[in-house]
Length: 483
Image (cartoon, rainbow, N blue to C red; front, side):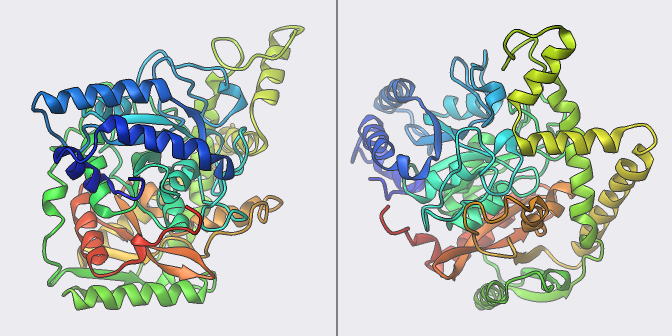
């Protein structure tokens, strides 16, 4: 049962081949057996899962149906879950139990999804390797000595290892697409505002976006259907109708214009990944797509702009964690200043402290115009590049990451080297565009992903291209040895 996709589970439940309760018990046992190797979960919610599974079976017995009704999933541990620890991978929130459900959690629960647990992540979603978590690094099931990517590495590793069929993630600069690429999954970052951020603990509010991680584009379509939609509780949520993503999967790619930016093929890209990207181009050509070289001239400025804007927003968002209202509090503070300093110094890890300090500096008097304001102007130029490109093409294609997964600890002494792994994904967040990573091959036994970008609210187009590609390739069906 653990090899079934979400779509296959939906069909199996509808045909009464097994019950949601049976499936849930199988997967919980599998997590207990295999997750100690991976460290992909922070919290397991066995009692809740079995209660939800029984309720889903009862709903089906009463004639209800739905692709997510009885389907087991997990949530990245920054989605608030009522009465369940929501830690954000940090000591700061190790004892925090949310008093409410995030909108994404509530919507998926209403659709009948069964929550198996909360997955490990980089602390406050800050990282590209899932090594900054207070609960320890997550291991890549394709090679336990390598990183799974981050910050949604726990969700990615769990799905890749067949511990469950799909999971939620969040993407601030590539944190769904990058781990999807490094673990042989399909991962989708929706248009900014498509999925509610209410109850999703913020890292950088103008960049964060929730989305699905699964093995296939078909499964991502199912999960996104349950997550997407307008939410009056979220001021950044956009009131735009949600199409039937599954209905658009089988559209023809004949005449689809796909752009390949020349800037993607720079010296920083592993040439073996470049070859796999071009192989995917040839595969899509067979399906009728036409290709054109395009240019994104301001892409070179994306990383410096992102690493001003994101830390600036983080320094503001994380100021609420002060040891006073909730979260970690230091022992025996001498006074209020000591309470603040020691609670934050002891509660936050190194990477979070680094980004808070960078952000506070960029927003400080005398430096705001030189750094933050300039970064926002670059952000606009990057968006303009995409708008010009989408006048010529329907989809943009390129590598998701410049390299395959690196060894655990290999980049810990050089944070900038890790930041550079996001060079292809960051631009979609800066512009607010939807992006998808799909499996496209292997380098040294490690998975490689190809990224697709589309105009605003064209998630269906991305899913259509990825699904058609997956009908004609088998990369996404490969399973890591031992799982």
